[in-house]
Image (tube, rainbow, N blue to C red):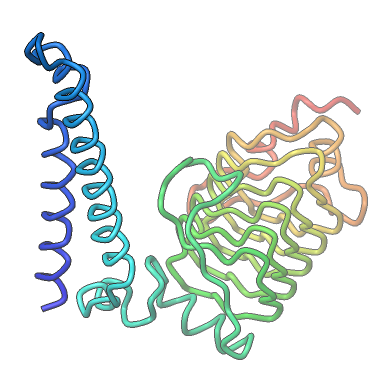
Length: 264
């Protein structure tokens, strides 16, 4: 019933708006008015046209305003899974909401993500410390500006996700796929990337890499600043020298970091 009402209101607004295009304008009335009664006739038609235009504008505005007051239909609730939030992910719903007592913020749109304008589930500014996201399909999820300290992402698919300006201190990324992930301005201190796949990831000088565990990680096509590359290859700031081979891709960690190009 509500859907039919909405269609009727839209149709009414469209008819009122389109009919105004065929209404005679005051200038046209003046041009074709008889010479002997130009002033009285033109003045009369101008008043009538102005009144008619005003009525059409008011009617159109009323129809469009009524549309905004229509309640959410059952179909819309179905698309949102009954939660009222479009794009909410079951993995986020079951794991993170339990961690934060249901006070969980999910929005649409993202900053500093690779696919500008795409629809994404976002946990912007959420406190997710200690959450368990292991063995989950989280590709494209944006955890930007969120606190994910001690979170467990072991063996999860995070390809194309974003941790922009987030905190992953001591997070467990072992065996996960973090290819094409945005780590801009992210804190990765003491994070465990053992056997992780980090191909084409986005890392800047503002990304904190202290005390990272990188044994067997594959960093193919991920570009680091020269001093960051040296630390990962040679060791320093709590990071052990790169070693091991990724069990999934078969790529040696040192080869993926191009350590042979690092000067002593």
